[in-house]
Image (cartoon, rainbow, N blue to C red):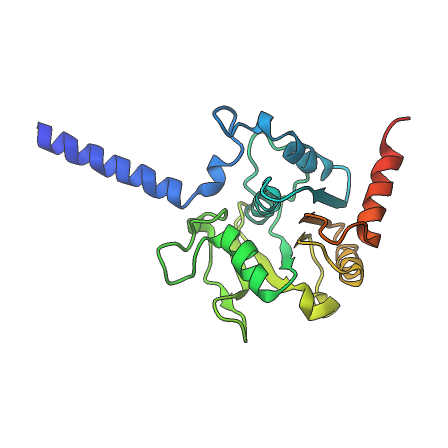
Length: 236
């Protein structure tokens, strides 16, 4: 191989490496070493570990600390069945039925959908989010909201397809009507009646409900219930 051919081959390999990194963001999440190594994210790791013991979890913290990354990362692991070696949280060995919701359709689209997918189906940015592009099926558009998807299919490691529904709290508890869920992720504080419905929809599957939010409304009934539960679990 001459010098020019070697340079072209190197360029091809570099481009392929960049492409894989672009469409497999989840692989770079919480690495073992480097400036973003997981030992620096103790609260995130605690949140993940708690899923092995508790059906209900809340990651409550200030803005810009990575709460949505934590929720989106765990949702991706369950949808794909591709858990990292270091994972010691809840595991599901089959394709899942899951639901993710924000407070409005717009925040569901701009935060949750964007974090998971990166961009829209017909763009180069589709698959640059946390769910690898190669595992994504064609999403189903939502009615009435531009660029929002209603359902996303994700290839599971077992060979089947997981199903993720995107909803919003402003639709009320009817977002769960007629469904049984393995995983529910609620990003932003949720009305108590919607949260109660989420618990009901995970009872038959022994599924999990996880929330990620900043308590902008103060000590609401839901926040107080989690704080009291944490206090009861702490050693005296």
